[in-house]
Amino acid sequence: MKKIILGMVFVFAAVSFTNAKNEIKNDKPYSVEYVAPDCWAGANAAETHTCGSVGCDFDLWAAVYSSCMGY
Amino acid sequence: MKTKLIIIINLLVSSLYAQQSAICTYKLIPKIGSFKINEADDNNTKYAKDLMLKATVVAKEYDYTLKFNKMESSSQISESMANDGENKYLNSIAKAVIGKGSFYQNKLLKITLWQTNVLGELYLVKDSLVNDWEISSESKKIGNYTCYKAVKQCSSCSSINKVWFTPEIPVPFGPLGYGGLPGLIISVVKKNTVLQLERIKFYDKPLVIEKPNKGKGIVRAEYDMITSSIRNNAKKMED
Image (cartoon, rainbow over all chains, first blue to last red; front, side, top):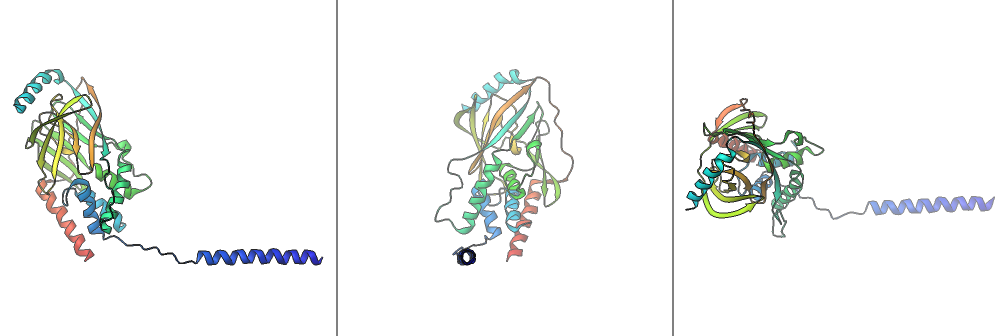
């Protein structure tokens, strides 16, 4: 009987230790830096690199700007 | 000399293609190394290049169709391909990389009509179909056709429009509303992409070309003003 209780205690202890370890791992701060693009400038850049200059393809500019703004 | 040669070729093949209509399928080909991100690029450029690279992959799957008879042509992204799929933003950008809207060209009236949607409003943009190109002596084979380079300055921006056309198919038509040359435009060259003829199917009977009639009629200069105003308003909203 004692062996069974000791065995259960050992299993619970092992599970608790593993969970605690995972929590620490998950809370580890990551050095992720997200820089939101300037949508207007980003759309201009897309237009420049695709058709050659700003002002040559409004549809492309509008599609990139809408995508960036989430419209 | 080059112009004379083109005219002679034109006359010789004119009789051959006199009765023909055709359906042409164009495909987008990204240039090698296009949209490559460099360390020196700022964040906006990196964002734009990354987005355009992804959009180009999607755009390659689309077919662009040009249909013509002796007098008229129409061209647009193939309807069967133009669904919005899973990512509506990426598909919208991909279609814009190729060229949105429907184009109609009429050799007799010397006009190009572009039916296009600007922020939900449909416009019919009228332009002329004239040979205002500078034809170069540079030539190359694209598929079975000998093509000549032609360039012209974009009227509303600082970029140069560059195309390759063949006098072997003597119609003044091309994709994306480009035309007016003494032969079919086989390839439209942009900064990082090329829209190029993949296949052409000729028909003995004339194909029916539908002239678009829906949309507010404006000229190119008005379209440029409308779109410029939208850009400026967007900038003001950001500031």
